[in-house]
Length: 361
Image (cartoon, rainbow, N blue to C red; front, side):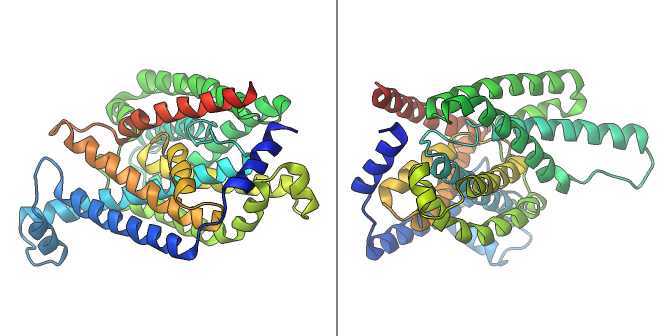
């Protein structure tokens, strides 16, 4: 019996479906935590606001005050963007782990993040060149709304390369992870070379973005990522049934009438869309897609449809909590949110790797 079939058999034995009552209780708790984190995010920063000041600002009771300006122009767009970005990374990780049957799969591990980052840096440098040199005093401008498309191309090509490198071992988790790290290291080196040599005035902001930061984000960034959120939410319900079957081994899925290759490609494509569109506005905030699906599976067992929405809320909460810590832990200096999630994710990744090595032995 192969490792994949053994794992799927163990999953069927231990992951009995969660009752509807427990699922509703989990969702209610997560919504409550989300609302608390939103309030805490609107209060936190170099200028501390009380809950009453935040509520008055949100209700337009104090339109000419500092609290109103800070809430609407700085913290509210940043808070909403953190929720959307976390939503994207978490669902991308859940999809990747399900369709590859790889508990180590994550946008930052399988190559999506590094490829998307390289494509975006090239796009920004190219945009600067075209706008400053070729189209100086011209109405032409490369809009930032094209960033997600650049990220999609880069993320897809990088992921494809990692998968091709791992085909000889049939996408074994450890091989996929090591190849992803290798491709990511090479890609990140190219990115840093481009930024240092050609970055010019963008160097500082680009380095901050590459670390995964929500600093200085506004409502325009939300409008960049929101259409991709809506597209993903509309498509995801059609993927849950095939994904439930893809979690079995390939032979079992084929006997159930599923075109394994076609659905696996479709699911990975949606995972790339989720991750790349988030990276376009926040940079690669690592390990959200690794951590969240495992927590979701502990809270809600068996039913992947339920795990989707639990993962979405958990991802939003984790990213927002990381951003709150990033801007308060050494205030007034701000850390990248990606630094916080990486500190959480590395120990979990090492633990999961040890589990995989133990199963292989």
